[in-house]
Amino acid sequence: MYFFLLNLSVLDLGSISTTVPKAMANSLWDTRAISYPGGAAQAFLFLFLISAEYYLLTVMAYDRYVAICKPLHYGTLLGSRACVHMAAAAWGSGFLYAVLHTVSTFSLPLCQGNAVDQFFCEIPQILKLSCSDAYLREVGVLAVGVCYTFGCFVFIVLSYGQIFRAVLRIPSEQGWHKTFSMCLPHLAVVSLFISTGIFAYLKPPSISSPSLDLLVAVLYSVVPPALNSLIYSMRNQEINDALRQLITGCFSVGRNCLLSSA
Image (cartoon, rainbow, N blue to C red; front, side, top):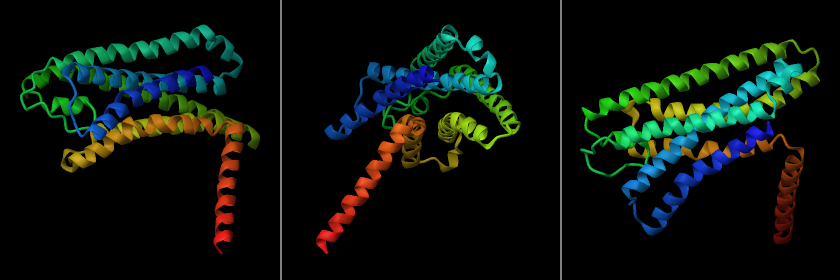
């Protein structure tokens, strides 16, 4: 689990670093300019890291399934070599899809200007600038992406279906608590990642507006990577104790200040 969490943390850090620093720099310097190669690189890196993260979350669902439903076979099915191979497959799949999607998108002629109405080079916004007839070349790539996304989603749902069936057969409350403590962080991360992504790409065009598109882009590109580490760290007892002490200290300082002012 910690090996996969390391990969997830690297992907989260990379995806935020791809979009946020450039957006902050543009805001500070009051500009929205980015070079064409820079935009292509930004779109490729973001798509690569987000796709690899989704595939890695799928692998992590299988890891939880084996740990709970086949605990005696865990060392055999998920040894160190198998974990490395699955992580490499997630990274490699994300890389290949990002190359295919980026090349297909940036080979389209831009017939409606070069102003992307977003804080980073988001591929759906770039497609809006392309010619309608050339846009048809992108349909095949999008179909492949939808198939991969739906396949991973079905795999995650089936894995958790088996996990919940196994949980219902656990007689002790302590076993329930241990099992849910293993699964809930991953389930929360997957739900946040998928729900924000679905809303970003499948929301009705009738409710689309520049401000809403910006908010949705922040929700799926910044919020999940920023919260993933926090969600998983809640399982660490030392972090929970430190957080509890911090909150208690803040309340104590605030109370002392109120007493002093009184």
